Length: 277
Image (cartoon, rainbow, N blue to C red; front, side):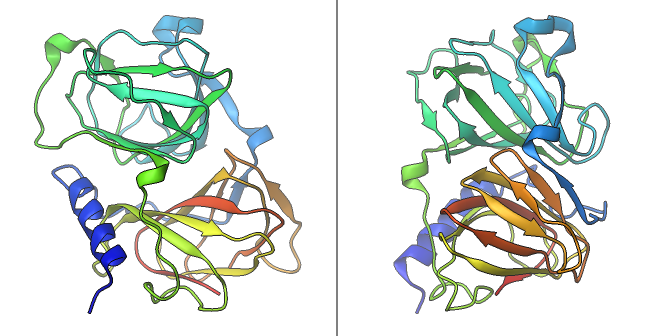
């Protein structure tokens, strides 16, 4: 019999798996690392210059029709005009407090570790309320454009805002791809866990974790959301210290080595299975 927590996680996954939820990603990932201090920054909306949030590239090109992952920094007090996007995006708060909703909605400030989904065509505003605000955004198609609300449309999806306190965390008793000895937890975000389907989860590594992630799919991308992890592709490779906002990709059948001194949360987007041991 499924546990109550497993059932809740499946319900959350079902809510986010609607019309535009991507099912596959044909762009194979490779062994690569982008540390937080080596991110290339520009403007999210170049037409607005410094009135726009800053955008930092992790993988892909958000200006082209391809999957991409990027960071967005918001100044304290930032509040966008009402607008829509031509494509759906999914986001995780890394620092600060962010609000993303209809312009008339009461502010729901999402703290670090929270998740939201913004459907294509849905009118909304985005605001920030802390001294330092940053989020990670994930898109399956592009280009990522900002358009006026006069062009709003309904694509069948619904917006989702999940405060970090409402995430459902499962442990090794609930999930088969995590070693029982690891004390690793996971929270499902979007996608399908059917064979070879694209999905995304948050993985929580405990302090003192030392192990590997075995990638069994052609596409595996990971972003550090909180904490700090030391990453190494093999014993022969150099170690990289990955702080929040850092990214690493992994080739199929590779097994990146990870170790932590503090509890660390990582966003993992994969086109199939992976194992933590």
